[in-house]
Length: 61
Image 1 (cartoon, one colour):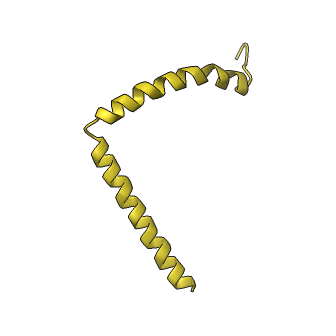
Image 2: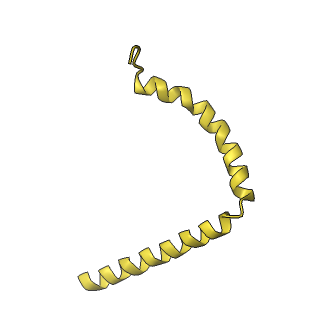
C-alpha cells in the first residue's frame, strides 16, 4: 500500500453509505419472496436452540 489508511478513518468513510443502503436493503427485504422462509428458518433455529439449552440445564441439574 502506498498510502495506508487508518482503520477508523476508512470506517468513517463508509458510515453514510451504509446508512443510505440500509433504507434500500430494508425495502428490498420487505418485498422479498425469501423473507417468510428466512423468518421460518430463524424461528425453527431459535426453538432448536431453546430445546438444547433446556436439555443441557436438565443434565446439569
